Amino acid sequence: MGNELTLSVGFGQLIPSKRPSRVDDPDPEWWLGTYYGTWRIMKGDEILCGSFDAARDRAWLVQRIGSIAPGAFQSLTQASPFDLRLDLSNGIAIDFMWTTSEVEDLFMVFGPNDLYLTFGPQSGWRRENRFAQR
Image (tube, rainbow, N blue to C red; front, side):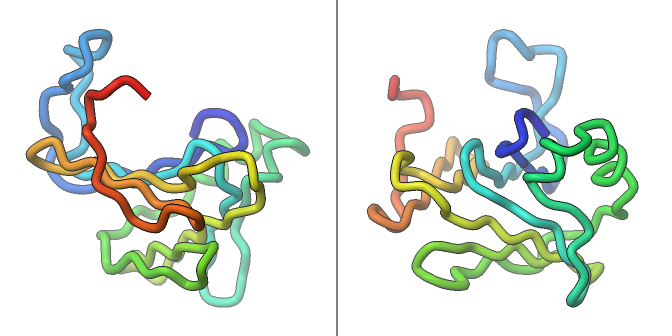
C-alpha cells in the first residue's frame, strides 16, 4: 500500500526485479493494482477495510491489511463499466472502483514476458509497452 488510493497485490513466484532501483528486491511474477482508484477489501458481505480508512487512521489500515490472510488468485472480473473485482481463493474479494474523471487508467496488470495491461472506463483494456515513457 502506498498512498490511500494505491493498492497492489502480487501473485506467483518471486523473480528478479527489472527496476534498477530494486535489483536486490524481487518482484512477484504477477502484480495487479491501482495507483488512483478507490478500493475496498471484502469477505462475503463485510467490508474489512477500504481506501478511505487511510484518511482516518493510516496505521490501523496498514495493520488491518497485514492481518488479512493471503489467498491465491481465483479471478478478475469487470463488475460494471467502472469497476473490477479480484476474487481470491480464501473468499476475500478486492473491489477497484472508478470515482474520478481525471485519471485515464484505473487498474494495471504486470505479468511474465513484460506483460503490461491497463484498464480504464474510457479506454477499456489495453496492452501497453511496459518500459515506454508515459
